[in-house]
Amino acid sequence: MDMLLSRQVPHSAEAEQAVLGSILIDSRCVPEVMTRLHPEDFYVTVNREIFTVISSMFNYSQTIDPVTLLDTMKQHGVYREESSRNYLLELMNVTPTSANVLKYAEIVKDKSVLRRIGETASHISLLIEEGANDSGAVLEAAEREIYAIRQGRNTGGLEAISSIVGGVYKQLAELAKNGSEIPGLSTGISDLDNFLMGLKKSDFIILASRPGMGKTSFALNMALNIGKQTGKTVAVFSLEMSKEQLVTRLISSEAFIDSRKLQTGRLSQDEWHRLAAAAASISRTGLMIDDNSMLTVSDMNAQCRRVPNLGLVVIDYLQLMSSASSDGGGSETRLQAVSEISRMMKIMAKELDVPVLCCSQLSRASVQRDDKRPRLSDLRESGSLEQDADIVLGLYREDYFVKDTANVNVAECVILKNRHGGTGTVELQWIPEYTTFSAVDKHHNQE
Image (cartoon, rainbow, N blue to C red; front, side):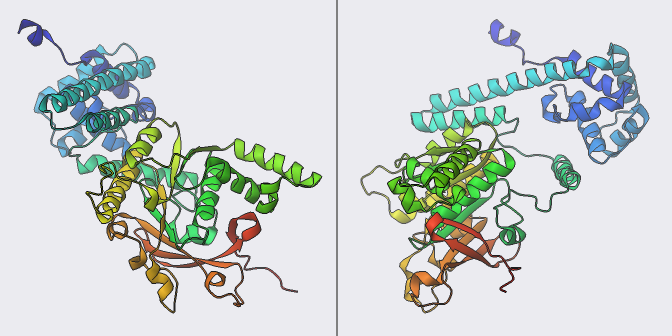
């Protein structure tokens, strides 16, 4: 009992005071401190309250000094008459120098991480003691919480709206500073970007079509473009095609070499040069591929947690996946399995804080209509796909169904659902010999 009572929660009151004192002595250090610390990193209640007020003032570009801080503390309801004034004076007196503020911040952050590790360990121990979960569920919970600590995020709990507003304000300021026309990752098709405003963090995107429409090629086009433009890692999980087949497609579209030639290896000297250049270009990107056909969403999530600088996850395709709870004995319906997979992928997108693009097949209902363009109701096996997805894109090529059409190699990307804006149709050029899509050249002079 004595040992338990003598245990102390990891924290350093002196470092917390030194951080706050440094800010009061020299407010120029605030931007660097804000990139390293959050209010929840402070253990002592009064220190946490003061830093929360400072964070709010910084987000709204207000002047930070002892006088303005005291006034804002009154507005936030954390002012305690003379004790608050005396405590701010004490903070400045006990701080040796503001020059070492980053070292003080490092100590505060380290203690905060140790506290969260301890909380996670206690939670995992509780799960084990309760015996209500199997080892896989406990391991998944442990990995999820440790990943959240690594990313500097909380795993849950209520959060004051003031801190959320501050975060949104900061995001808008960064967008304005960068001058980007779209807030998300570019798909490589400008007309599509105008509809979607890019692929945004935590979005669950479904790319659906009938077999043979080119959804794998379109997904690879987006993956390669994002990998090249952002320098971020793109994780591609292929449950249908081998990694060699996927890379062959990428080389074909990047080098503009007929995919059938790549299958035979009969290339001209110029084509060998283009192949080498394309291979080098693709190799420099952060694309990573897993072609294990037995993967579950939990497996993918676990792998992605270990990927540094992750920007996008691509899954090809949903109907080939098995749910984590499947026992292989047919005890669950496919409807239940797809519903579970869909929900888990949305959760994965939120947890990893990256867009997750998942290919999906459309039901046969679409080919039985006169107008064979995809509809939301055509998503196979589960209405939960329509519900969970932030964006649903459908691919359609008229020449696939009508052999004598004038619209040869013209494709349509139909935006069936878009939480961030409107729906509509974007026209694309399908280049079958290179298994790739491109934007339609609307300014081409026929003459």
